[in-house]
Length: 193
Image (tube, rainbow, N blue to C red; front, side, top):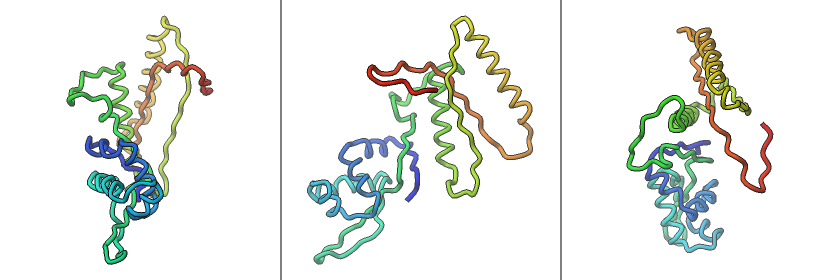
C-alpha cells in the first residue's frame, strides 16, 4: 500500500468521489472481503462488491488475496493508498479549455500548486533524506505599496536564483505562492499566521 496516490484521471476522481465508495475505501485500509465490509457498513454484499469493483477498475483498490468460503472463491481487497490527492486540474476545468495564465493570475497559481503536488507525490518517501522546507506567513500590504512589494519580492528571489543557480549540486525547486487571504467564515476564529 502506498502512502499517497496522486489522481490525475477523471475516471479515478469519478470513482472515488461518491460517499458510499469513500466509506468502502476507508474499510479497505486493512485487507477485507466484500462480505466483511458489508457487515461493518450494514450494506448488502452485492452493493459493496459493486463499489469495490469500481474502485479496483480505477486503480484505487486491489485484490490482495482469494480464499474459499463455503465452496465459493471470495476476494480480499485493500485500498491502494493511505491517502489520495486529487489533481487541481480535475477541479473546475470545463471541456479541457485553459485560459492563458500570466504570472499574477489565480489560474497560474493553481497550475503551480498542481505542479508542486505532482512533484512531491513522485518523491520516494523511503529515501534516507528528503531535505525540504515549507514556510508560511501572512504579509499585509497597502494597495499603494503592492508594486513595491512585488518588486522587492522579485529582486530577493532573483538574488537567490543568481547565487545558487549554478550547474553543480542537488537541484531543488523553489515555488512561491502569494494570494489574497480569504476572510474567515462567520463563527470561525482566524488561525494565527
